[in-house]
Image (spheres, rainbow, N blue to C red):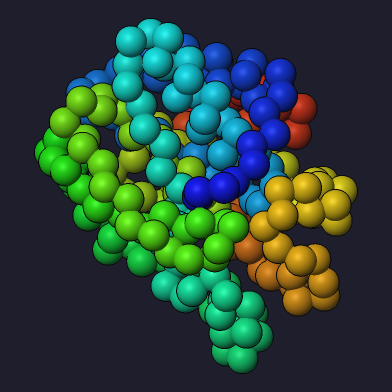
Length: 215
């Protein structure tokens, strides 16, 4: 997302190093790494840190953020959710998975691809053009990213929105105004995201330690 503020700390870098070790050990051609977790858990920071580390290994890895793929416009999303019922509509089906799958297919084929990119300053949805021919890995991050069928490595961050409450309250990244509706949305996202945990190959614990699963 254009204009997003990343709050990268040492814990993100250390976790990214562990993930990179796992990725390199299981490396395959045009690999896809998916990172899921609740809002404020550090998905984008982890994706960015991992991409930078892989670049040091001479591997071009491109992060894409599924928050760019919502069906509803950023300025209309809150009203639409309230009107249609937060518990009914907040979840996987809010995303344009056909576009996500198309961009993943373009990466796999090494094609030039266009994708949406939300500008957080203007709240406009721009179009980004990317040449995947020289990109060797794709890092997909987002609430439900590990649902992507093509993912080779699935990472799940165990932190919940209640554990990162201070971050939401302070609204440090300027993404959303916190109010009763926003808390209700976070609670529903929590239910949806937590159901994905069994799909993970790697878990990021509450202390940001990386643990391999027995999946």
